[in-house]
Length: 123
Picture 1 (spheres, one colour):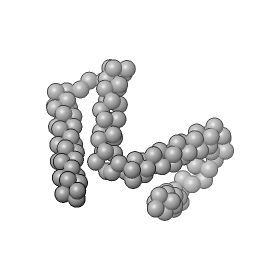
Picture 2 (cartoon, helix red, strand yellow; picture 1 turned 60 degrees about the vertical axis):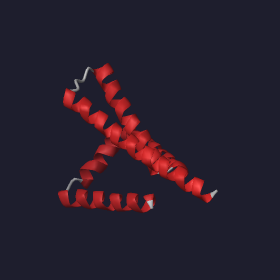
Picture 3 (cartoon, one colour; picture 1 turned 45 degrees about the horizontal axis):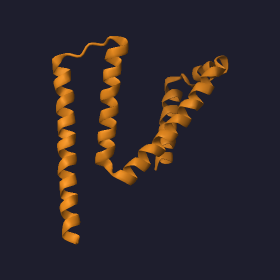
Picture 4 (cartoon, helix red, strand yellow; picture 1 turned 120 degrees about the horizontal axis):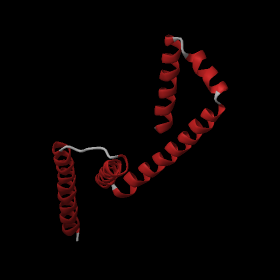
């Protein structure tokens, strides 16, 4: 499935570059800056490995756990951005982050409770 999505994305990107007349410009840029190709290739490899981790996490633990992991990752990214780069968070932003976490954890709690009830009814 991911292969199909990436192939369609490549076709759409190339089509856009052709219609905008910038495909040749992009090719010339890649020839002038060959380190760009190395960085683009490394980004592609890291993205594909990341997709494997995403798929295996959802397959093994389910989408709720994956959502919790991604939300925590984003919260840490925001926190580190504030610490290292001095970005400012308004009280509305902090409140919104708390609401998002609360909603996700309530959903996870209810799903855990449901799965526990279904396991006890099987026994």
